[in-house]
Image (cartoon, rainbow, N blue to C red):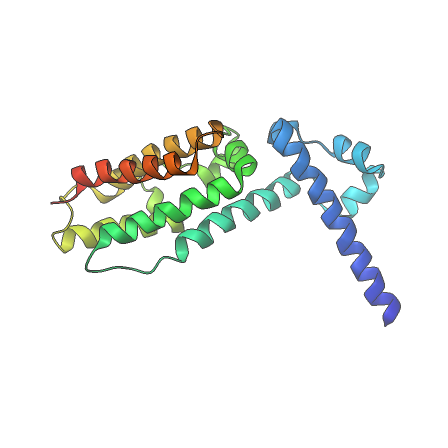
Length: 204
C-alpha cells in the first residue's frame, strides 16, 4: 500500500514536471512552439515517458488552455447579480476579468492572441451566437438583458453590445500587459475612465 502511494506521488510529480516545462515553452514561444521533443530535451526524458502520461501534444495544450480559462471563468463567476444596479455588476465582472488577466500575463497574451483553430474554439467571442457556447460571455449578456428589462440600459442587441464592450476591454488589457511600467494609480485611472465612457453610451 505504501509503495503504491509512493508510486502515485512519483507519477503525479512527473506529470506536473512535464506540464511545468510545457508552460515555460509556451510562455516564450507560444503554443505553436511547443513540441514533445522540446519537452524531452529540457527534462532529459525519452518521448515514451511523455506519451505514458499524455496522448500527444494536443492533450497537453488542451490541459493548459483549460487551466487558464478556468481561472478567468472563476473570476467572472464569483460576481453576484445586482438587479438594482446592473452596471456595478458589469464593472465588477470586468474588473475581475482584468485582474485575472494581469495575474497570468503570459498565459493571457499567448492564448488570447493566438489564431490557432483549436485555441479559438475556446477564445473566439465575436461570432454570432457565441453567448450560447461561452458561459462567461453568457453571464455578461444576461447582465445586459436585465439592465434593459429594468430600464437601466439602452435597448441595444445584448450579444452585440457584450461583444463590443469585451473587445474594447480586451484592447485595454493587452496594452496594460504590454506597458508594464505604468503606475498602479494610472492603471486604475485608465480602468475607471474606460468604464465611465462605456456606461455613458449604455445607461439610459
